[in-house]
Image (cartoon, rainbow, N blue to C red):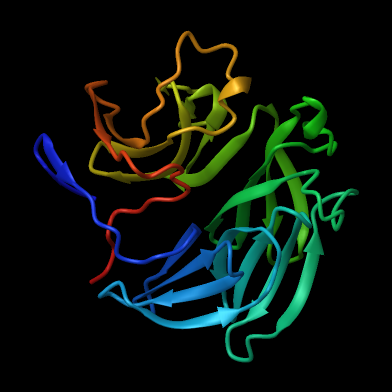
Length: 259
């Protein structure tokens, strides 16, 4: 997406069903999840796929990198897979909860964010009963130094996109359109499904999907059906919305970090 004042345009540079992606600034590469083919795409700064790493893990959602491993989250098995970057073999798998490996995504872990030695991640249900309309979602931390999981936020409604920005945890309650800049500060609310976040200067860049779980957004006065990108200035409280008609779901977004 290119924005010039109030004008904008967007262009598809890679074909596929891409979920979360990770900028590896040391290698100047993007590692991205291809959800349908179950591959990891390695993308260069010309936005060309240099290679595909076939992993055949069902329902890959979150991705990050830590030392010599690519960390992949499976929302169907609710576990973390540590893929060796050199051998491309699985070295370790860590389960999230009692209902991991059901193949049904009963906890539905989704997005993640690496901060120092901690992997923050979000999920729909700690108990595993979200498919029965019991939404006890939250955000937890996988401490990579000791592989311990610590729950930090509870009783969230379909949270996504946990990120540490300015040393504070940011996240969405996506279906409710709520954006939090800490566990107690919710400065922005949209009227659609929010997912995908980045920041430049004093501006937050927020993604909105076209339709996703909208029947559950009972607290909203109305629902925006358009997908698009919000540019929200948290100092002035001014917001501009850039429509991305033709794109159904926005999962992840980043300001271009290629050097």
